[in-house]
Image (tube, rainbow, N blue to C red):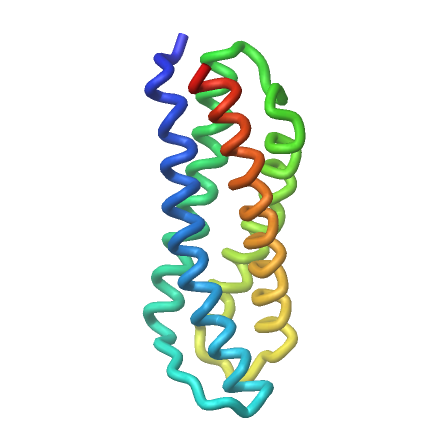
Length: 146
């Protein structure tokens, strides 16, 4: 059995990923406004790339660790219902985020469709993460604090 303390690693990792993801998404939004809406914006490309990778890898690590810890602790998966389901549904968006991000970091001219795919996948991923935060708080309250 996994000690209850181990179950806290998942929400800590995911919280860090969400906070970092918020900043990275904001930077991406500034870039979008500059490129497509003609607004003046400062965009630190290297910071966006680096922190974006960190955020997505943190989300992936949190997802894997959450699955591992719940399986080892409770002997089953899916006890958290929609939190578990949406967490698994985030996996393809995390993959698209990483793949398109790695493709965009290599210089080869303008690729607006690829950038739009990258930004859209990450915006959807962020909305899913917000739901995960809400449902995760409920899961912590019901399963870890009682």
